[in-house]
Image 1 (tube, one colour):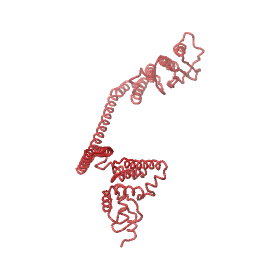
Image 2 (cartoon, helix red, strand yellow):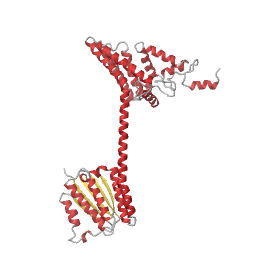
Image 3 (cartoon, rainbow, N blue to C red):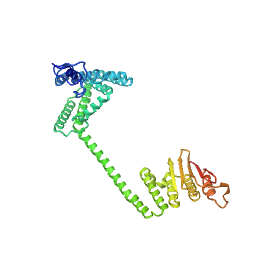
Image 4 (cartoon, helix red, strand yellow):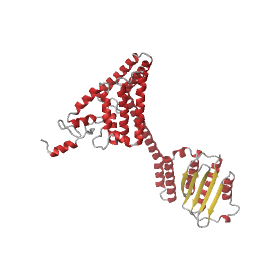
Length: 423
């Protein structure tokens, strides 16, 4: 006699207990190999799962009936631990129900077309296998996340059709035997074709079997070679990137650290060296194209302003760029005017830093140069000082651009340059 606790543990278990039928009928979870149909029947009837699997295997020999019954039960039976079956989940989702209904109609049309043309593919094993294929599609569309993970793991570890390469002798032997049998059957079918429609149907069927056999034989090796080549290529790229980074750090950063150590007594030199190295590292890591193509991009030309001003005047430049373009005459004039504005700010504003902001838009390019220094009176500039008049305003106006200068004594200076882009 079983105790109450033992009966409760049997009831909640999904394993079959010989001689103890359990209700309700559910697909197995812990004793499932594929869909858990055989395990569910074994648990419900209180017999071994192996017996149920033998029954389904024997029914498969009867025109594929075992496969069709298995797939049908897989659709309609609820899995242990879940609240609804696959077919119920499909009809609860209109989008999935539409997909499955279209697939079912297409399957019926295919069966009818094969029957009408007299190819014989719809006789015997034909229509059960086609309906089973439709059921497999419906199972995948309506399976729960947990069951999909189970199916993915199953097919990835299957030695015959799985994506993972099996190194066991048994798996290799099974794959070779099955693939060779399919290839032989396909060649045999192609060799015995006759009649007009019979010739077409047999040729297609034999070719399909031949292709499947070749895939079963060689697909795992091909997949393994692809994965190995991909992994090798990725590792080679990592090694090259690592070597490039080490070389750059050795050639640039370590040398800069040595120069900083020698110039430790001069604070301005230390700041300048550190800023140069910071700017170089940022460009190398985040904008390598502007390093190699500094003269062929607007961002590269503006970056040269930052480098020159910091090196020549020891003033920190805060540069922000939005967008990029290929320089032409207008862009070159805009960059030259921006350079003049930045140099004026570094020389005369007495500010510790200068901000440069650029923005490339479809119709125009804008450059803003701003400092928070002493400022000046724009109207008080003498006539012999032509830096702003010639280098900024006239240079911009010659090519259709505009220059706006906003400054006052004690409130800093902001220079806005706007140049229309060439059509």
